[in-house]
Image (cartoon, rainbow, N blue to C red; front, side, top):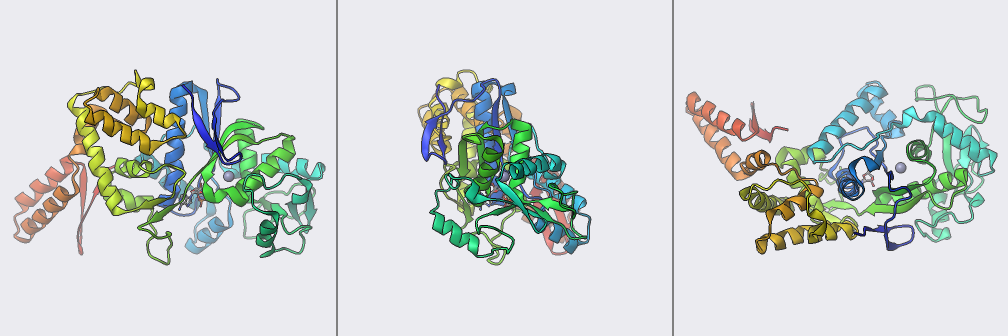
Length: 449
Ligand code: AMP
Ligand code: ZN
């Protein structure tokens, strides 16, 4: 059994060997909590959940430590809290609660540790002071900046030509920077902004830059060097490049993580998601119309490194596929306990850099050949679908067209003042897990979670 993963740093698929097989350590950059997460944000959560499940299957449940942080100090958070007239903590708590509910509905396990940036300020300050003491950072106008020229092999992860990086950095060069590429580790806070006592003898209270947060939290919970660091492809530069610079320079290590994994981007109906285009889709929006497992399946039909086009058509196909699989597994009443999973082609596909589309194709091949449903069930289990018989039965009853039909018939009954009939339909829908909401503008429905 050999797990291969693609590493963005070395640009190759390599055999994965943990530093310590008794504790496989993975860090994934989590959300900045100021608003509902969009369906693009769901991608790394689902992808790394599958990897987490796979690692737990290979190395043992208690032998994987998955850390996903919460960025709860950020200028976007300050701005949104001011806009809504609520305290920052209230905004971050509310957003975090929503995020947790959303990703649970997508079938994702909670990570082992979910550290908050605001609870790791001391670790950040320790790192910053170390970097200054070692000549990798300097204080200027109450800021602390990382000195990029102090690290000779800066830029290895993104492999961007230096002149391109410099040109990018020049767009907004603060006068206190020694070099256009230098980036902020700590900055002063104004009176109405959250602030903490500053490091390095700076008198004004301040707050950390974004990159130092992840260096501090991964250090605290996983150590100076760990196995896997993940996130979306947009984080490669500058975020991950700068995390590497901070951590490697602070600890004098050759690597921060042995494998750097990045998921490709998601777009919606062929277009980049944006508020101005009106195609901005939150996870909440998706869950109003589709069961969580349909959304999960739809995400996993594409390999994690490929771009994904999120479409209603894809969701409909996913629903059909899922229904076929549930039907197959359910008909045999299989109990998915993972036994024998290791020999299946479904499992081999996942071991090959998390090839979920191949795993799904193998599931269909297994069904086509009438193979043991246990094999299909085990594959689905590692992909994160729960398959106990009761669950399957209730899921299979959820049919969007049937629901909409019933909602329409109930509306007719109400118009005709046939309340006995309309109540009967409401009960029938409730039994299917559908909750109705009657408003002045009509009736909406959602699947109870
Ligand atoms: P953010 O809150 O913007 O820092 O994003 C949280 C996570 O979602 C990061 O790992 C991002 O790389 C990822 N992400 C953001 N937008 C997308 C997208 N459209 N497609 C895939 N991943 C995304
Ligand atoms: Zn990060």
